[in-house]
Image 1: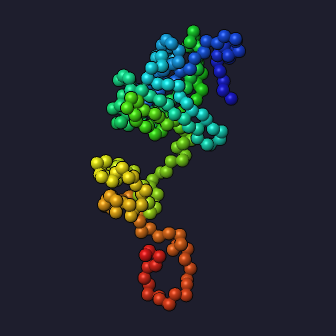
Image 2: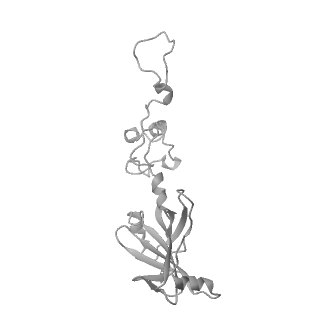
Image 3: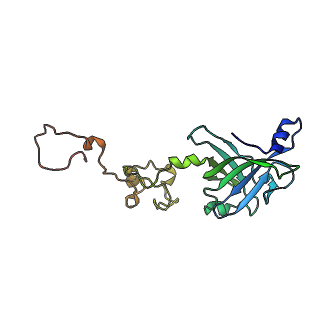
Length: 220
């Protein structure tokens, strides 16, 4: 249950409320930025929250239990506070967003309502769209590598090594070894295990085949 300061409870109960939304962005390097829907800057707990100009109100929802909630946030590159270079260099990766509510007439009283973390960041000409995820999202992330026949690199990244100027780049990649070999001629950087045996071989039982020469089977 969310416990609100008495002043906020009174404001919610009144016919005319002086409430507004605020949200705080916190990077892993310690940088914090504050934004508010109010038409003037507010100071909450020592941080100045600027009127909306480089951000829009987050569109996100939470889920019950361990299911992670998700949403999105639109950011515009309008000043040095949120720059394209910082986003491309990964400085906003896994940043935290805290949603707050306060009384603009007396911002000493505020409530922390929800937190999200930055997921995928999709760049555009004038800004970026940020995927917002709850902390439960970490439970779905794979730790270490998974041994599979498919490649686990992303097309064009450092592990793949393929240049975006490659004539077949626009065709995309389905992570298959044959595609890497025939379309991109990039098998030296293939990050899968194309000759990994399947469950059919691992679970095979003795058969009636006449040949018993000790050779491998099922690897074709």
